[in-house]
Image: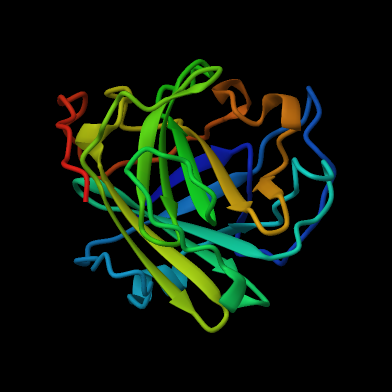
Length: 244
């Protein structure tokens, strides 16, 4: 079985139980997420019911950066990753003990409105200077942009997402073509990622083990070796997609 391994500064990765470790310090090694290789056609429907999703290791053990930095969040989050010949897939399960209180606020694309959100930032070169960010709220509104010290939403990528609210929380499923990402030609890849969940009703923002002062910048993202099945297309111009 072929794997793509990615180290994330915001997740505890592998088939592990929930933990609550301390915030990363300057000399700490970031944890690792193993992205599972898939040869299946993954349906972007917000269900995560394909067998590969069930087999994939997950990231959990998120910590708050607000309102109380370093505390465990009120709700559990699990994030899984798959990769195929032409895209990566991200499946996030946002557990919620009060799903009727999830904020499903509609709005314009690229507007980070008052809603429950899931955000992933990808630093494909692992240079800790720039990351491509993709976000979806519980109403299915998309946001994307380039994160340096701040998020610039003038960049619009072409990608897919689907959201499903359940009786135990909400799920987001994302497909990002390799052509929307920037990374090296190396067969052995080192990427950095950052996951974040926003729960507005409690004022919580929960990345994984990233201090508040560093939560929005890519320099705390990190990467580990992995393999892609072939050299995918990269750096294609992203076409703006119309607002829905």
